[in-house]
Image (cartoon, rainbow, N blue to C red; front, top):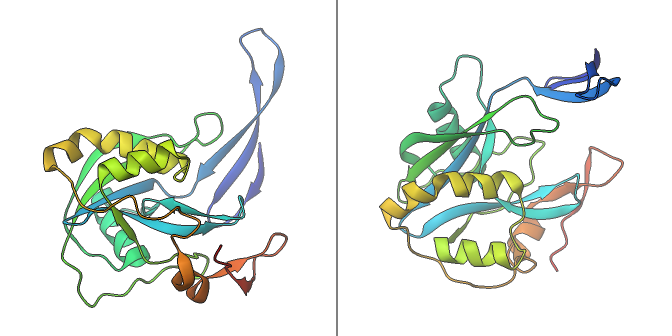
Length: 212
């Protein structure tokens, strides 16, 4: 039974029979678009985007992601989402795997794509009005793993996509980046000055992000 729907997806409260024979209900979310996650690779390493995430009330370092338009190939969607969120253009894109981002709730899967990025040009990021993102941060595989160990990268979709991409990344011998500063310092003044974040209880951006 559908209990909620909007332009992004639909929430169902299904009647189910559990293995014990008990009858009950189970929530199921269905996105309106097939998902896509982009792992951007370039001479400087891997690119992650500092994005303010309203549900957790914090900035999260993540690989770019989004959804496929009707009839759109996942690789084409990956290239589009990459350019929209970061201003980076892909020289090549290929599919490397599939994810289910939350098997206990979300029905819709996501394609993981590896994008080899062209040298930086004059392309500017064009995030959607509902997105609060800053300039991408480049780092090596070793740095990414260290940041995960330290708890500085905790987006489950990003961690899963990195795992899927590991073999392909090893073959590319990705280097670059350094340990740098803790992510609390990562977005810095640039993010605080440019991003306007939605406050809890409102979908309207009202105050600039605060750099810590």
